[in-house]
Image (cartoon, rainbow, N blue to C red; front, top):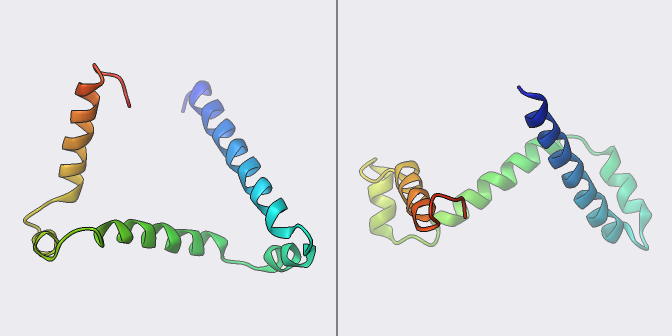
Length: 98
């Protein structure tokens, strides 16, 4: 890992921590005891992973039954389609990320 990529990762983590602190300030305003309960709780990593999976799954709810069945049977590959669409965006932007 290069020094530059490490700096980017650290600054991204610091920015995320600042966003969480802002959220927690609002959440705990007027009821600081809520923050104490949150601090005493364990398993946030596991629960965050569960929320991420639920969000990914929620994308599937927009798809029709036929498409879901094709994905289930492996006849349509979501990662392949996602990469193809990402390339379309990249080409449309003149080779720049959009």
